[in-house]
Amino acid sequence: MEEDKVVFNNLLRSAGLNKKVFSELTGLHYGSVANWGGKDKPMPPWVESWLTLYIDNQECKALKKLLKDTVCKES
Image (tube, rainbow, N blue to C red; front, side, top):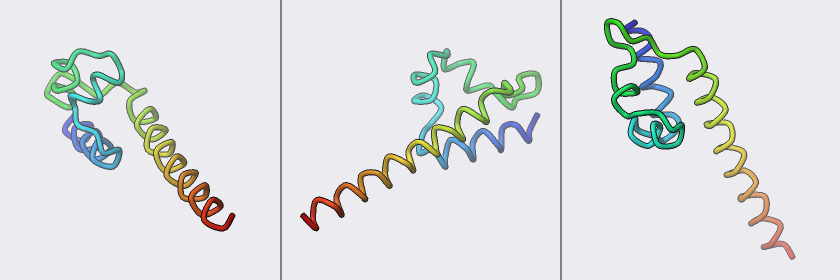
């Protein structure tokens, strides 16, 4: 369970999110999210893939903006 907490916190940090914002984005109660990784509260299996996709999406958005800005400067 402690491993879940470490994985979850590392993914949140990589995503630039905190538990409150994550709970708002996913529609989950903050209390549930805050307890993940505790003694009896494992992180749900879907969370890791959700956060990984969120991170990938943010990176794609940044790359798209960079490419767009580069093309606009060259025009």
